[in-house]
Length: 159
Image (spheres, rainbow, N blue to C red):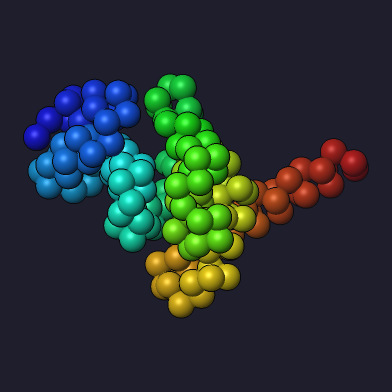
Protein backbone atom coordinates (compact mmCIF):
# COMPACT_ATOMS: atom_id res chain seq x y z
CA UNK A 1 0.00 0.00 0.00
CA UNK A 2 1.37 3.35 -1.05
CA UNK A 3 0.97 6.70 0.65
CA UNK A 4 1.53 8.41 -2.67
CA UNK A 5 -1.33 6.45 -4.25
CA UNK A 6 -3.52 7.16 -1.21
CA UNK A 7 -2.82 10.88 -1.58
CA UNK A 8 -3.67 10.77 -5.29
CA UNK A 9 -6.99 9.09 -4.56
CA UNK A 10 -7.65 11.59 -1.78
CA UNK A 11 -6.90 14.57 -4.04
CA UNK A 12 -9.18 13.07 -6.71
CA UNK A 13 -11.90 12.72 -4.03
CA UNK A 14 -12.00 8.96 -4.48
CA UNK A 15 -12.49 8.39 -0.79
CA UNK A 16 -13.22 4.67 -0.88
CA UNK A 17 -10.00 3.93 -2.76
CA UNK A 18 -8.08 6.39 -0.57
CA UNK A 19 -9.45 4.68 2.54
CA UNK A 20 -8.15 1.28 1.42
CA UNK A 21 -4.70 2.66 0.63
CA UNK A 22 -4.53 4.71 3.83
CA UNK A 23 -5.42 1.68 5.94
CA UNK A 24 -2.45 -0.10 4.37
CA UNK A 25 -0.18 2.86 5.07
CA UNK A 26 -1.31 2.95 8.70
CA UNK A 27 -0.89 -0.79 9.07
CA UNK A 28 2.79 -0.30 8.22
CA UNK A 29 3.16 2.88 10.28
CA UNK A 30 0.39 3.31 12.90
CA UNK A 31 1.78 6.67 14.04
CA UNK A 32 1.52 8.35 10.61
CA UNK A 33 -0.58 11.34 11.69
CA UNK A 34 -0.95 12.67 8.15
CA UNK A 35 -2.45 9.40 6.93
CA UNK A 36 -4.68 9.17 10.00
CA UNK A 37 -5.90 12.72 9.44
CA UNK A 38 -6.98 11.85 5.90
CA UNK A 39 -8.42 8.52 6.98
CA UNK A 40 -10.79 10.36 9.35
CA UNK A 41 -12.16 12.28 6.36
CA UNK A 42 -12.46 9.10 4.29
CA UNK A 43 -14.20 7.17 7.05
CA UNK A 44 -16.61 10.04 7.63
CA UNK A 45 -17.40 10.38 3.95
CA UNK A 46 -17.77 6.60 3.63
CA UNK A 47 -20.24 6.50 6.52
CA UNK A 48 -17.91 4.86 9.05
CA UNK A 49 -18.56 7.49 11.69
CA UNK A 50 -17.59 5.51 14.81
CA UNK A 51 -14.22 4.58 13.29
CA UNK A 52 -13.66 8.21 12.30
CA UNK A 53 -14.54 9.43 15.80
CA UNK A 54 -12.10 6.99 17.44
CA UNK A 55 -9.18 8.10 15.28
CA UNK A 56 -10.12 11.76 15.58
CA UNK A 57 -10.19 11.45 19.37
CA UNK A 58 -6.69 9.91 19.32
CA UNK A 59 -5.40 12.69 17.07
CA UNK A 60 -6.81 15.57 19.10
CA UNK A 61 -5.76 13.97 22.37
CA UNK A 62 -2.20 13.97 21.04
CA UNK A 63 -2.34 17.40 19.37
CA UNK A 64 -5.63 19.17 18.69
CA UNK A 65 -3.89 21.87 16.66
CA UNK A 66 -2.83 19.25 14.13
CA UNK A 67 -6.47 19.08 13.04
CA UNK A 68 -7.63 22.61 13.84
CA UNK A 69 -4.73 24.25 11.98
CA UNK A 70 -5.57 22.45 8.75
CA UNK A 71 -5.20 24.73 5.75
CA UNK A 72 -7.92 23.99 3.18
CA UNK A 73 -5.64 24.84 0.26
CA UNK A 74 -2.17 23.74 1.37
CA UNK A 75 -3.51 20.51 2.88
CA UNK A 76 -5.98 19.92 0.03
CA UNK A 77 -8.73 19.54 2.60
CA UNK A 78 -12.09 18.68 1.05
CA UNK A 79 -14.06 19.50 4.18
CA UNK A 80 -15.82 22.61 2.86
CA UNK A 81 -16.99 20.57 -0.15
CA UNK A 82 -18.09 17.73 2.11
CA UNK A 83 -19.87 20.07 4.54
CA UNK A 84 -21.77 21.52 1.62
CA UNK A 85 -22.61 18.03 0.39
CA UNK A 86 -23.93 16.93 3.78
CA UNK A 87 -25.85 20.15 4.48
CA UNK A 88 -27.37 20.79 1.09
CA UNK A 89 -27.91 17.44 -0.52
CA UNK A 90 -29.86 16.13 2.46
CA UNK A 91 -27.99 12.85 2.43
CA UNK A 92 -28.85 12.39 6.09
CA UNK A 93 -31.78 13.52 8.16
CA UNK A 94 -31.03 16.94 9.56
CA UNK A 95 -31.89 15.81 13.07
CA UNK A 96 -29.95 12.56 13.21
CA UNK A 97 -26.84 12.13 15.36
CA UNK A 98 -24.95 10.89 12.29
CA UNK A 99 -25.71 14.16 10.48
CA UNK A 100 -24.36 16.24 13.35
CA UNK A 101 -21.35 13.95 13.92
CA UNK A 102 -20.37 14.18 10.25
CA UNK A 103 -20.62 17.95 10.33
CA UNK A 104 -18.75 18.07 13.63
CA UNK A 105 -15.90 16.05 12.18
CA UNK A 106 -15.66 18.00 8.93
CA UNK A 107 -16.00 21.38 10.64
CA UNK A 108 -13.16 20.59 13.05
CA UNK A 109 -10.77 20.85 10.11
CA UNK A 110 -12.11 24.32 9.25
CA UNK A 111 -13.78 25.96 12.25
CA UNK A 112 -13.67 24.44 15.73
CA UNK A 113 -16.60 26.55 16.95
CA UNK A 114 -18.93 25.17 14.26
CA UNK A 115 -17.60 21.72 15.07
CA UNK A 116 -18.41 22.20 18.74
CA UNK A 117 -21.97 23.28 17.92
CA UNK A 118 -22.55 20.17 15.81
CA UNK A 119 -21.02 17.79 18.33
CA UNK A 120 -23.19 19.36 21.03
CA UNK A 121 -26.29 18.73 18.89
CA UNK A 122 -25.18 15.12 18.36
CA UNK A 123 -24.73 14.73 22.12
CA UNK A 124 -28.25 15.99 22.75
CA UNK A 125 -29.46 13.00 20.76
CA UNK A 126 -26.80 10.45 21.72
CA UNK A 127 -25.88 11.49 25.24
CA UNK A 128 -24.36 8.11 26.20
CA UNK A 129 -21.79 7.94 23.40
CA UNK A 130 -18.52 7.86 25.37
CA UNK A 131 -16.26 8.71 22.43
CA UNK A 132 -18.49 11.62 21.46
CA UNK A 133 -18.46 12.90 25.04
CA UNK A 134 -14.65 12.79 25.22
CA UNK A 135 -14.32 14.44 21.81
CA UNK A 136 -16.74 17.20 22.76
CA UNK A 137 -14.97 17.77 26.10
CA UNK A 138 -11.57 18.13 24.42
CA UNK A 139 -12.84 20.58 21.80
CA UNK A 140 -14.76 22.52 24.48
CA UNK A 141 -11.62 22.76 26.64
CA UNK A 142 -9.68 24.04 23.63
CA UNK A 143 -12.42 26.57 22.89
CA UNK A 144 -12.53 27.76 26.49
CA UNK A 145 -8.74 28.15 26.48
CA UNK A 146 -8.80 30.17 23.23
CA UNK A 147 -11.54 32.44 24.55
CA UNK A 148 -9.81 33.01 27.90
CA UNK A 149 -6.61 33.96 26.04
CA UNK A 150 -8.60 36.43 23.93
CA UNK A 151 -10.08 38.01 27.05
CA UNK A 152 -6.65 38.32 28.68
CA UNK A 153 -5.29 39.87 25.49
CA UNK A 154 -8.15 42.40 25.42
CA UNK A 155 -7.55 43.23 29.09
CA UNK A 156 -3.89 43.97 28.36
CA UNK A 157 -4.72 46.21 25.41
CA UNK A 158 -7.19 48.23 27.52
CA UNK A 159 -4.56 48.90 30.22
